[in-house]
Image (cartoon, helix red, strand yellow):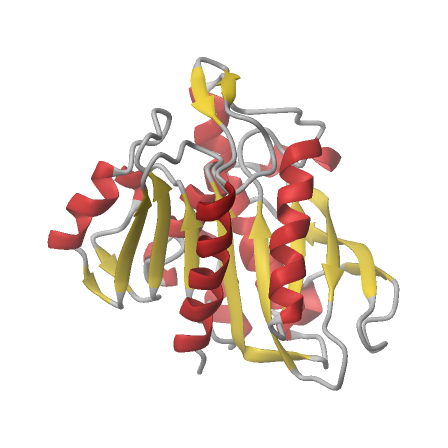
Length: 273
C-alpha cells in the first residue's frame, strides 16, 4: 500500500538515540476479512547513534503477547537492538479483542491470513520512516507468526496481499530476509523469493520439524535453511518451564534460545541489501 494510504499514529520520537516508542498502524485486513480491520499496536526500540538502521518486525504466536511471550520477544528485541537493528514488536490481537487462536483451527487459519496484511502494512510503515533503511526490513515470527512469515517468503504477487494491491502500489522493496521460529511446515512455499531460515525443536509435538527438513529437497528460488535443536520443544526461545499447553508440550531451552538469536542475526546480516 502507498505510504499516503496508511494512517499512522506514533507515540514517542524515533529520532532520539536508543529510544523506545509505541503506536498503532491502521491495518486493512484484506477484502475477505474486513471484520478484522484494526489499529494494530506496536512497541519499537532503536539503537543508539544515527540511522538509517535496518529493522526487524517480530510477530507473536497464537496466544498473543502474554507474559512469557512478551518477555521472550523483549529478549529478542534486546539482542537485535544491540546488533544495530530497530526492533518492532507487533501486537495483532489486543485491539481486535482476540485472546488466543490456539484451540480453533478456523480462527488460526483466518488469523494466518489477515496477519499477513498486518506484516505488510508494518513493512510499509517502517519504510516511510527517515531513520529506517527501506531496503533492509526483515521479518521474524513465532509459531502462528512463523506461519505468517513463511507464507510471506513467497513472491508477494502470489500471496494473499495481491488482491488488495498493497505490493504493487507501494513501489517499495519486499522483506530482505525472513526467520520463522517453529512454524507449521506445510506452509513453507515451494518457491521462495525471500531468504528463509526456519528454527525448530526436535521434540516439538505441536508443529513438528520434520516437514521443514523435507522441504529442503523441493524448495527452490531464494536461500532456504533449517536448524533443528536437540531436546528442544515448541516455544524453546521463551523464558518458561517445560509444561503442557492446550494439549502440547511447550517450554524454554536457554541454550537453543541463545544460539537461535545468533543465527537469526547472522541470517539477516548475510542477506542485507
